[in-house]
Image 1 (cartoon, rainbow, N blue to C red):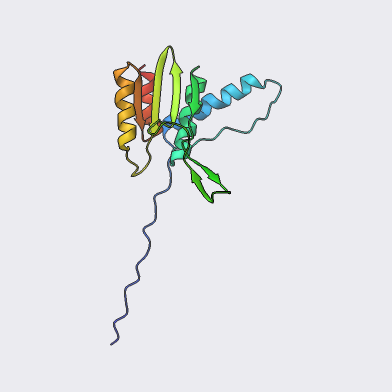
Image 2 (cartoon, rainbow, N blue to C red):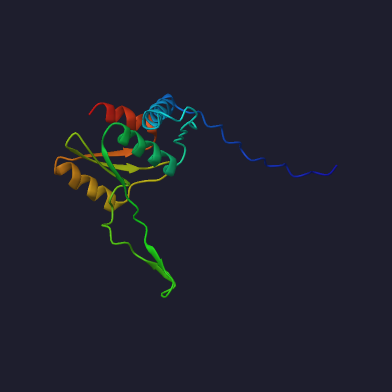
Length: 153
């Protein structure tokens, strides 16, 4: 009898289940859109997910804006220089968080870490400096966790 190799099948990723906090954000965004555009009876629903770093960052920035905070998303990536045929480093300080915000007079630094992503040494230094100066720093790995932290402020 011939021994056939066993077939290795990919492990299927479980389907995304939207947390209740993300559903609440969608309701808030829909209500804000209706308030801003009262003459538009059929607006497309606002949809959010928190299953990637980019989607999580979008959820957080939108929620902060809806709560009345000043929000800015930082891009710390360098710029590709065609003449040099390489990336030039950006001018921002190393270790700055993904989101800077001010809410009710408080300075908020929010670093988005999704999946196996970990903080760098430079990010840990910025976190230490921010908290030493009285500012708030949060490392967000999902929207529900962030919302609980923010609602306690």
